[in-house]
Length: 275
Image (cartoon, rainbow, N blue to C red; front, side, top):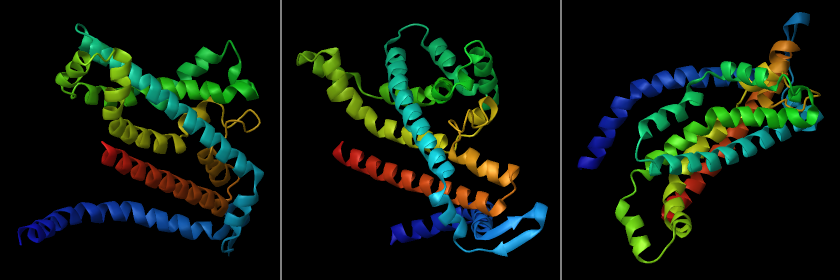
């Protein structure tokens, strides 16, 4: 009797916030869906219903396939490096006895820097090498900039979990003769896994929608080697003014992000069930 009443109270309390969230989320989404079904080019006064023609074009467009590939490479490489470096930084902080607060503060500095400022810093750093103008090096250069900026996010998640692990667990492993590497592999990393998956989910969704670094540093070049899905949608929406096609690309980005989020949530549930 008590649980249903509590659920009803929770629903009543959440209703205003959910209504505001729906109004600022669902309406723009519905507008984007409608726009993606139209051929709208304001410069030429074109506005006609074309159905799923834009989606069919995107699935055949080599430029869209290239943007999808670039986005996948950028996301996988960035998040993988951030997880590895973030765990390493968290382990280093957890073992510090003195200056730990200073270490945490220094670690968070890159995360506090706005994306555009980060882009300008790395633009200055890369200028002598010319990497941003070389097709084979521009994307790795962007990945390095993104890893520098966002590794503190993963490190903070991992560090918070590390300091919450009871010391008795590590002491018991040491008594049983387990070395540091064995303890890390058998105890620390499994306990970190749920937190790392959650942090990796946030970072994956963020990387899939990355825009500022590419826009400022390369603009998608050279030769579209750094053009991500968001830059592809931006180009059609604001440069060529093909609003319907750009909206269709944005909707596909939303679908991809939703599928990735769904896969991460299921992986997180499976990990928590094992632990």
